[in-house]
Image (cartoon, rainbow, N blue to C red; front, side, top):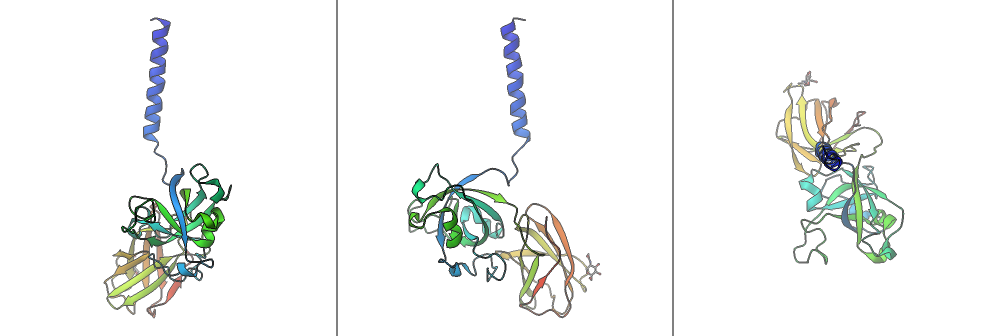
Length: 262
Ligand SMILES: *[C@@H]1O[C@H](CO)[C@@H](O)[C@H](O)[C@H]1NC(C)=O
């Protein structure tokens, strides 16, 4: 075989191996930066960010503080992203450098939804319109990476594991035959994929459904019974919170557990 031809064959083989390697190792969802834009809301003390479409309520007392963001439709995923954590930096390549704080990142938790505004063009006010990836961040979080007068900045972001103190918390709202359970303070994935409830009477796992944000509902009669929850996070880890709610529970109560996702 002519040396040139042999070399061509070797190169072809190497190229093919690279293609196979690339195809068989998809990047995990939590690596790699993606691009988006970011604005801010809620005031300097973030008081205007309380509540929010994930249903965490008072973000100070729930431990989310002022490092929070409202996600555009493309990122919010009908509430499935509630509780996820993102590392965000001003994108100096795409930004007017005047409005970027260099070399800093900020970590935020998704606690709210930034609704589309179809009255406005996507590049002029309708920032959260699909299919745009946009973070409307609590002002103190945004000001870590952006300069106030900039108003809107191009950012790079990536999903990162959430760090939490203590265990997962369950708050029971609703009424008899309509139990609305808020799952808060979730570490690692931060977001919940599915959830079941078991009672002393049913002695079986009853599937719950996402009602809104981080609130899951069951239509079963749970009143007056000790409850256990089985929760699977978005990354596929399942934890069983056995008998975390005592028999005498009342609507509006929060139950703190010692279990946490890793
Ligand atoms: C449901 O809860 C009861 C009471 O705590 C317990 O005895 C039972 O083993 C649980 N059932 C399942 C399927 O986990």
